[in-house]
Image 1 (spheres, rainbow, N blue to C red):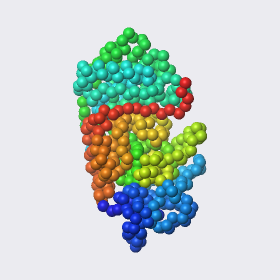
Image 2: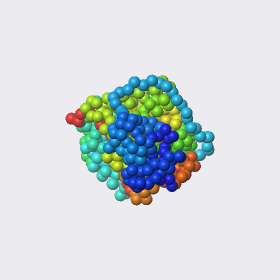
Image 3: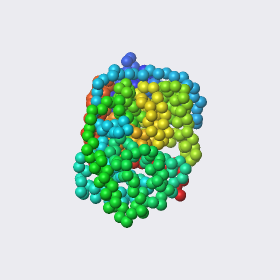
Image 4: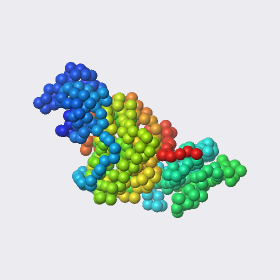
Length: 495
């Protein structure tokens, strides 16, 4: 394995693929570079002498500017680089579509064909509280069910607790009702029980109306204040749902029926070198098969947004992308918060220095396909191909948002590691070998193997097979551990 990489021919920095010691001599073509400080893995080394104010180039694009003169061989990080980013920018539609497509293949997975034409990769029974006040009652209903049925013939019964559904105003109230309603028709759910209290502002009758047409054998509603024993009544309704879904079985489904979310968290300096590019190639492959991928984390598009805008399939989608970026900046400013308060301490420890550095690595998950649509938070996928989704970078909120949009699975890259799982399967992909070894109980797939001189287009075939197996029923680490949760985006006042 090489000790360093120059990602793009225009780059003025190298990235250490393993720790490099002071005094080591690195050979880059005809250049002999003496390393002047110890360089941790994932961190940057100046390839040339750089003047104060000069742009620093990584991924072929500026990631900030030097705040002091920097000698060749010096460590480049937060002590000598600052962001170039500022407030809202003026954008022009200058399309540059260079999609790397793949041949169409006759590849399938085993999924659940739903009556509405969608395909699930799990057949689970969900209990969804309309308000946080009945979280405990929902858990008692699930506990009673498991004591009698042990989730036989289905992939489990799960409660998705949250603390919303009441004391919310405006968009927060609407968003809560919308995303919970979206869950009712998610194809990974063979059936859903909505449990309300009765006095909350997220009224069951309004929630029911927002769902539209539904199968009353598989989607049921209960208001706790309307019955004498909500646990007994909830248990009765859950049994009815179970009887309607217990005979569902897996059938052969084309990859074109997959809608997969793309997310990163706890990123490090190798995220943009291994795991994120792997997801980009996978995204291009899936889209070539007629499938759909969704990229979110809007604040982690800042600094790389023009690369996405250039890929808008038409000017309407371009304008929606501009609004996506500027509206999120406005959201920060409403609360008098800095737009570019990123990356996190963990990101910095892993070698990411500025938001441009993080964003240029983050957006690689979207591959090279055209951007077909831009979704508001709570919006459902309508167009196949690559979609952008409005949601923050927060791992739980963004991953939940991908599920609310209709994704059956989220591919989650990480250089630092995280054990959480959303209400849909959340596949953890490590950026480096050490994390995959140290946290084998968290990590499902190791993209760090790309550092062992593996060709990414060959390696992606292994990843495709693995994803297909997960979609066919193989359980992920967080599923085995029982970690499943939702997090709803909040932007306003709580009464």
